[in-house]
Image (cartoon, rainbow, N blue to C red):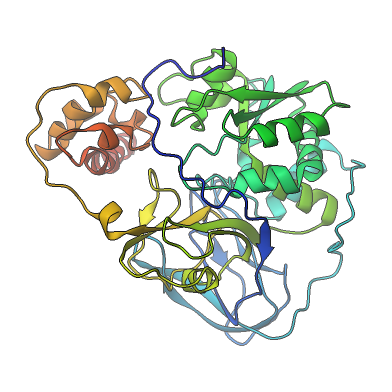
Length: 443
């Protein structure tokens, strides 16, 4: 029997329309908009000014806080401004705007396709390179990768888990990476194992990707310390706590991180970025982005420079189809609806999904009928109807007591609710308010 997590879960329509589209590299934008809030934690701080000349891969912003990340130029050219630009939330944020000139890289980057599988860097050097390369979690969480790899002295990492689940409907960027860059991913896994000093790694893949499972098994035959594990198709299988339970039956306590149970989880895209940083001296200046939708002319998987406007990607797939109702950054379950298509690709942009009007329409909301379906499907064992009511009545003590901060915003409750209650919207509001209350209490 295939492994899975124990509480809740749903099976939305998969719609992996772009799964047979090989990764296609698109040209760098004429103007790149590089946002400073691309990582979880403190925004990066610009170290360039208007008029500065930059090369591809050059450091342009530093992560000065403990949880932050460096940012590098995705194009060569002139800094047009350090100003603001709209992000995926619709708000304007600090951004470095660079006009492209030529295609000049910083020295030392290996741009060849030749596999470099010989690992010579020490554990300390690998960690330093990952930090200096600005790598964050590319599954969407954007937690700085080097911070995740810094195991506290009183903890011990036993397993590296590489997340190739990609359970969000529509998205296929990790799937294509596993098919097309498996050798590089295996080297990336070995680098991460060395950085963590762990004896075992598990690459987890949902069972709806049998070719990727078989391919990765073939590529790891010579590495018995790396296990490929097929998992049951169930959303949100790729969430960290659910993934750890599925593989090892270990439960991460409320409010704690995976290292609490001896695990560190990294995404497939992150693992590939680690390979490129350590073995090719290439910082994180691009990523794979799925651009898709049921009526999109050419659903695709693109290798895209950070800072490329979303509108450019949509033009590449044939434009906005007639009758479209919404453009989403990320997957349909956890992504955000874009208010402005000039928002740029950031490190956490895994996909752009175009919904038609029917898919976009919000159904009429009715009163809660106490059916408890939201409780049945919640993978965190929460009571979404109760938390939602608490938020609507500003009852923050009830929300905190019933663990609103444990919500992973997977959207399973909203997807299931027969009354179309805005459950996940309310829980996001609740997390923001209760989080603020907790921080103020500590200060």
